[in-house]
Amino acid sequence: MMDLSEKQWVKHAVFHPFEGFEDMRWKKSGSLKISFIIVALFFIGTVCQDRLYAFHFWNSYDKIFNIVPYIVKSIVVFAAWVIGNWAVCTLLNGEGTLKRICIYSSYSLIPYVSSLYITTFLSHFLITDEGVFLFCIHYAGLLWSALLMFNAVKSVHQYSVPKTAAAIILTVIAMLIMMFLLVLVMSLFQKVGLFIYSVYTELQYRFRV
Image (spheres, rainbow, N blue to C red):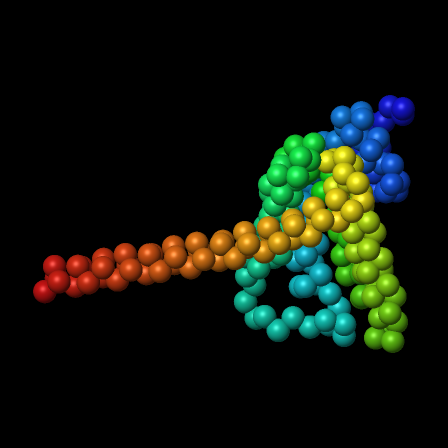
């Protein structure tokens, strides 16, 4: 089997969706450092697409920049996918570790992340009638990443095709449950914070009186 550098393994995994991740598994290759860089680029690309897209294709009406929604749409969603897939596949006797799931999943995002930057850049040079090219690039990257993600899950856990599909569906359900619980916890902390603040202001007022 080929002996590649970490950067070459990234290229091999992206351009060989059916055997790339299997080769990585047997060679125990994959870099967590590169994985974090890809996720960071995913976050930046999400921000760029929403804030820097040409106005004749997309106009953001938000006057105040809030970074939290972009963190949720990129880093939090990716983390939920990794943790959800690890939890589900542990119950389904999957062979993948949390580290391997993170690496393989991040490598799978490369076509989609690339499409974010390419479409944002091209949006400043194309007219409205040529928007179909941006549409095609965006969804080509999305479908390519979806294919890579499917094969990444299949390879890292050594599943059959039907079991891989079932694992992905259960992972999405687990993600929704985690996001719902996260919203509940954040709402609870917000209410506790408001309660503590109201008690503090009330005590402060009474001590002054």
